[in-house]
Amino acid sequence: MAKPSKIDAATGSEVLTRTLGPLAECWGQENGQLSIDCQPLSARLVQTPAYVYSRRCLDMATAALRNALPASIGIHYAIKANPFPPLLRHMAERVDGFDCASLAEMKLAANVAQTGHKLSIAGPAKSRAEHRYAIETGVTINAESIGELERIMIEACAMGRTARVALRVNPPFTLKGSGMHMGGGARPFGIDSEAIPALLEQRQRLAAGGIDLVGLHLFAGSQNLDAQAIAATLAAWTDLLRDWQQATGYTPKELIIGPGLGVAYHPGEQPLELDALAPAFARLDDELATLGQAGGITIDARLELGRFLVAGAGVYLTRVVDRKVSRGTTYLLCDGGMHHHLALSGNLGAILRRNWPLVAIDHLDSEANERVDLAGPLCTPLDVLGKNQSLPPLAPGDWLAVLQSGAYSASASPAGFLSRGPAIEFLI
Image (cartoon, rainbow, N blue to C red; front, side, top):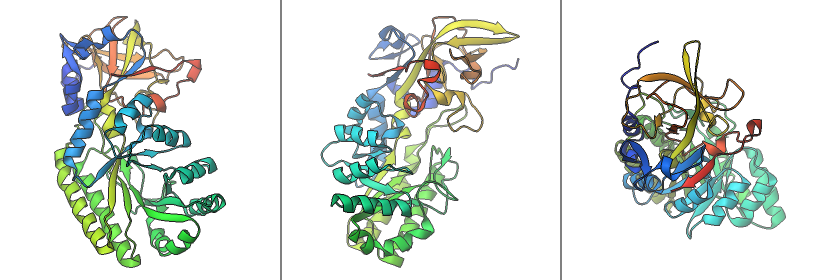
């Protein structure tokens, strides 16, 4: 068996620092144990599997982004990253609005929204119920197609109301290095950029049909750790906006921009440095101010983020139930699995499965000098938590924490698979 590499053989404390960067400060360490409020997690919680989210981490992530942004650019939280209601209530006091992806998310957002918050809904194939709720409550609908614009007009006219609408743009470029490409090429998301000018020219017809074309939704990709690529994409967006303004005279009153800020999940990845993006955010602010001046308005610009704000605030906790050796491979069999954390198994958008940052929470000071495979309780070979992963020698009863688990984890996993129940969730 190959010896663990230096990066794999790090202690749990080193993995925390390397993976979470500044957010590692949120997760306390007492005598080699992962703790919150000076109390070890394994003593505070008695039931696994569980998700634990740190209020302090949420606050730090949001504050760090605020510090990197000009004051005039707001923050929207994308609920799809983590819709846990206590977490939403906490975030509502720290952001300027919410982006939703379903009727249920719009209702969750409405329950926690603060005065001055704006809400929007995105996603292809929105239902009639979603359109009607958005029109009735003033949620901005990010239109994904010309056909959707027609459906919105039908509903608005039938209700005798005006719909707030933004055109979601499928750009002619991608955000290079993204984990998921949301723009460029043929996509189910957004209206192809070459069709946007013609629609902007038709804004009087749209207005007559009950559509208030309030702005644009710009999103090219997600999960990106390359500050230069993110900066280049922001510049490309402002180039498009300038071209459209010159061609059609349209200046958006509102802009929602998904910058695609990513988090470090896998060995060798480095956390994104917000300081490196601050100049790009300042340039974006300057460009939008110039566009707004030319159009005689002030553009209300907001960044849409989900993962970047909440991933580092969450850990997934599971316990070792059994330890076995099968033909030379040591297995740790755990009470948690892919039904709670699908991404661990590589079945949530990964092309090749890679190990996640995983630590033994009561052995943070111990060197990870044993290679093991980790599996959950499901009767399927897909139930993988780790492959050839470096950990300290562990036994049944030991606790494991999967870092960076605050986003696209509990709600993005098949909790009912094999009739298993969901993991419990805590905000601490």
